[in-house]
Image: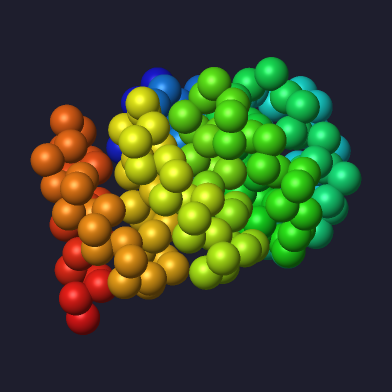
Length: 192
């Protein structure tokens, strides 16, 4: 089924839930938008089905619940044990969003084999530790994954620490275009 344009305005939570179960390939944004709207109307609908959701729907649900103010730390912490690395990454991001501050509980994910999980742990460090995360984040500037290196630059940009200029300069010739763009963005941000 091809959906060119879908209006979700004015739909009931039950109608949105039906739309949530339409299979959409390669469009995480679709699930995120539907999940956010369901949460706006009735987040208990999604809470009742988290254990049966596909990976994309579960990631969208974690994002929507945390974005809509559901502070169920136990739920998000339970997803840190999930075998699906993108779910773990989403859970780490959700924990940062809802105010979880236990860096010791998250720091172990810096050595995870998934670049998405390592990136989420770096985002968590930046969010929770603030400027004191500079040393932790900068250690990963030479990570083997361009995803993590880009996360390093993005987080350093958020910190706004002028020491990051040297790191950004060293990454302007990175193999990854996304990393080079992030390095340029960091330099632009810090020069203002």
